[in-house]
Length: 156
Length: 166
Image (cartoon, rainbow over the protein chains, first blue to last red):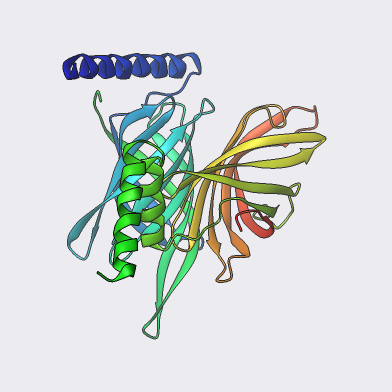
């Protein structure tokens, strides 16, 4: 009985996957899964906020996806999770969440436009960052530009 | 046995039994517990008057935003309502952390094509205001009446106008 249930749920997943792929094809959603991007995050005043690498791993449902970012801070590499959506208009929206990075949870969003050759993503980010003044930690929402360049592409 | 302990044991057993027979959706219960443990503010069932401004300070049409219900853990869904020649309703999905709300909005057919964007907002200590920044793919009306779409952004401020969670 359990074997039948397992086979049935695997079939359901395959059907859902195929239906999502068809939806993306019909809506002209750019195929950007299985890609790694060198990313530069800037503050509103133009100063660099951070540099890291972002990977778009796989589609989850329809045009929604998940991935992750990797950043080195103080010699230690941190990995943070990303979820997002790709629109037919070549806009990529994403939410990133970095638990305990470097010591507490950071969360934010970005909205980017994919270049015609699909090699660059340019847009803006906004997120919570920690500001330490006179030993006191305060949390603020900061924003700025973000630029990504594709550095690797493979079949997911 | 202490009557308080007896009551606690009976309550726990009843909850477990109810969960097992499906009276309480277990996932919903776990999500509620996770939000409580993480100190996630209860902002579902609330309506907010939102003021969106471009980077140069010029205003967009005001609208209202409703945070409807939790979907899983601290993820939620809701909608926005905006009057731009006629009333448009757009979808919102997002996530709440102890003081920050991030959301993605998606408006199909507003005003002539789909708009999509994100916002990141800080919740005031009294839970009555949200303020932050937004970025989205916005249509700008051209002289010929057509729309040129590009990424635009600015500030957004929301004030709670209705709370039906209490």
